[in-house]
Image (cartoon, rainbow, N blue to C red):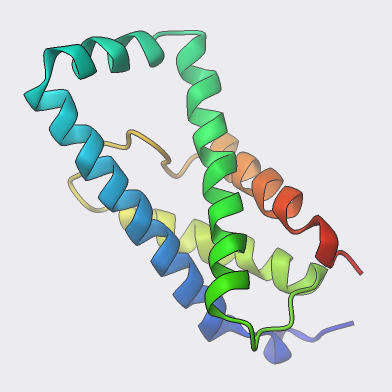
Length: 133
């Protein structure tokens, strides 16, 4: 069993930062499309009306967790990925999402809420299934 000090916290925080940076860029692109194109505005308004909007929001959060594990696999091959490091990735992602919520950006994809953190957890462990040990 890993102790908290032996986990790769710095790498996991960097992965979280990269993942949130990708999400911010995508949200900016979506926001520009929303303000510049009536067709995109209508499509987004349709996608984010209840109950479809709740499903879209949770699916985006699951995708956010999957993206975090993908970034970890791809850009940090020196990090040993196991269930402990996947569990440690969750609070890192929540922390960086909390910092993102301080920015004046509309949360089109993912925001910090209990449901979204649970969906991120599902995404992390769905993509990280081969690393469960």
